[in-house]
Length: 111
Length: 114
Image (tube, rainbow over all chains, first blue to last red; front, side, top):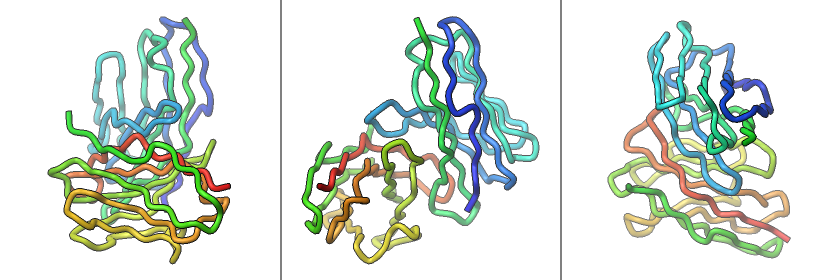
């Protein structure tokens, strides 16, 4: 079982500010996915990263996969209230048929 | 846009009763999953299903749980004799391929065992 640590656990910022959340493990991942979950709903896939050092951008969201494929970060530029939610990272091993999730970072963007 | 749909959205059941949670995965997907999330806790893997059989299951998925794809479209999770600790959000997911491909989740079924 791969243990994922997400930090910080909670983050509250003002609209327009930037934020970064992290996902770390001592294990190497085959791939890593970021999801966003709103209360009472299912996780919604944001991005998948597979290559060490990879950077992907999705509008104001920038995702980075560590060179050693053990960690990842999600950076949001000029956050908006609509970015509020629980951000989850999830990984799977090369021979796994499952995703293992981190506990998530709860992001609150105040208007 | 294709999506995973789950029914019911909320189910209340008495302890000891059987429940069946239903899911319609995305139509061209081949791998199906159930996850659960107890309030305030992590999303936890229960089981994966491919080619009409279980590919992998977690320790949570004991003899009280079963899955089935009865008609080629629905994917069901049955809990035979519910316990209070089974109260959780249950999410169905599907993916085009596996392992480590993108999984798409349904909106979830909130199961409350009283």
